Length: 205
Image 1: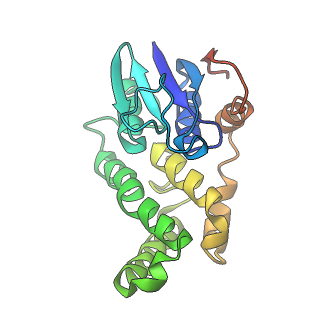
Image 2 (image 1 turned 90 degrees about the horizontal axis):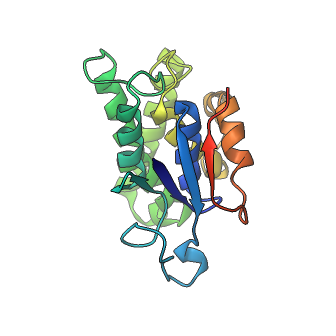
């Protein structure tokens, strides 16, 4: 059984979307976010610092967004939203998955906190990163891996939607984000209710 510990409106919404894309049966357990409780962790949440997402797979705990995304897509190797080992696109998939969590997410956070204005080297890296992403979408899009939509797009689209106002004018980013309106995403958003009880969900068609 898959159990996702989730704070509505947080980054764990990305994993709920992924679970829907995978067609997985899972339990969604809403927990309090430490940001809203003065740093206190919800005792039900197995994440070591009380953050979300955290995934429990039959007692095996996986935390951190990138690790959970890779774990789940490897768990469902026949789902097109992942790229299994041996596939020619596996290297590109892993690269973009970790580019998002290791570079894009931290730089967007730094942009939001104004930290880039005080660090010229990181500001240059941020500009180069956005240029690289936009060039990739323009040259081989519509997705990061060309015609194939993957979990890397789920992570990137979710981040860019949340931070759209920080990114500046970009028709390519706008076109990319328009592709996020998918049935699985709509189902995940419908279930992303702050006061919804925990429930088992089977992904719909």
